Length: 142
Image (cartoon, rainbow, N blue to C red):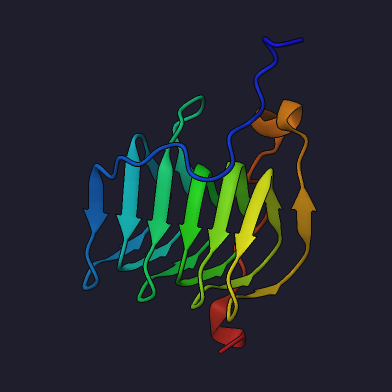
């Protein structure tokens, strides 16, 4: 009865080991461990190393054209693709997601927009959802 541990709200990982600067553009998939802050642009899928508690932060200047999968995610930029969080998603005021968001915990600030579905995930299903959807062609969107 007293030993049951409730999931903690909010971000659990705070370490950011890598920065991709504003003037960097990457074409291809990116996998990371620990934490990653993106100020630049990535065309490709971004995923955390399986089984790790990671933090992925997208600044207001960042753009991702592809799917994003991580443990804790803080979005303040633009994502064209699906977002899958094993734990927590925070959509800050400048966040714009064109795609579906799968989350366990969600915080959405005033001004953030989502053009897709929000789907709450069961914690037991966290590792089973895969990023196998196609990348959306952003040029046709604008």
